Length: 133
Image (cartoon, rainbow, N blue to C red; front, side, top):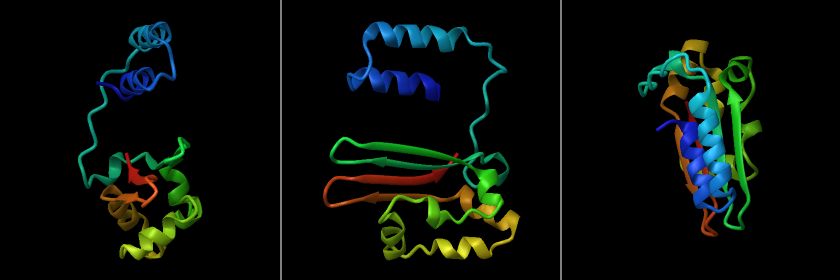
């Protein structure tokens, strides 16, 4: 199942769109020209990483999805500056120091990011996920 199809079905299940809207969107992505399926990225393969993903599902219904191009990370953007408020403190409290990534060479940074996956679940039910794809 493609990512677009999954998102459309999730929106339908959550009641964010109607069945007619879902059908229209599914028809649209099925009729879009395809350059062929993209092979999935193998874990630990830094050459295939394109995005740093930060996803927040708030207990109060707020949802935030940030897709940061890895090129920006390569250009020197600090990871801590793009994380939601409080996330870097929780990540650091769990023993992960993102500051070490800025000291790595480009290839080493991409290799480290290839395996990056951080999941934070707050006591209030908020969920924060940071990963690369």
